Amino acid sequence: RKEVEQDPGPFNVPEGATVAFNCTYSNSASQSFFWYRQDCRKEPKLLMSVYSSGNEDGRFTAQLNRASQYISLLIRDSKLSDSATYLCVVNPRGYIPTFGRGTSLIVHP
Amino acid sequence: DAGITQSPRHKVTETGTPVTLRCHQTENHRYMYWYRQDPGHGLRLIHYSYGVKDTDKGEVSDGYSVSRSKTEDFLLTLESATSSQTSVYFCAISESSNGELFFGEGSRLTVL
Image (cartoon, rainbow over all chains, first blue to last red; front, side, top):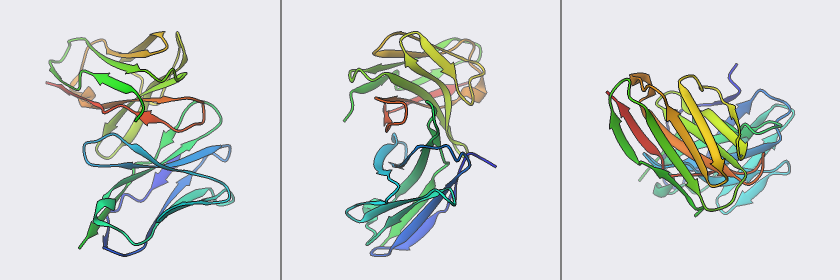
């Protein structure tokens, strides 16, 4: 089993839709979790950190389920500009952040 | 945006030649990473550094070496480039061992 797994998609949704991605991880000692956004041929950029209690930033909500070892990202009221690849990052104890392969989101008019 | 620059941004080279990619930061962050990104594989860690002269191997370190003689610079060297090392290389920095990463714009390397 890979350390961090994501459904590659693509998720193809209309504007205004709500879409959710999950990311599972295998190392139960993982301590920190993040969602990154990557546009085509660009560098990944931090979207949001994921906290145990869940956190929200505008239309984006991130949650952590330690018991089932997954994190999730919910996007409400999708915009065309949300089209991108979403990467989850899991950091076990130590220095090695590990990336999922990414989930592709396409928002169409 | 975090002060992190990569050079060169694009390079085409031939099999068997040495190549060095440079990552320079102005944030004084302790941790620096080199990743490569390939279709179907996502971002994979090559090497990382947790301080000056302190480096360690990542998941795909074969064929690569690194050096960090100053806090601000982290060099990635391909001693003898192969076509399988054609990729996009990203440098990242982090203030703490479990903190968020900030990425450079990437270096696109083509080995013919």
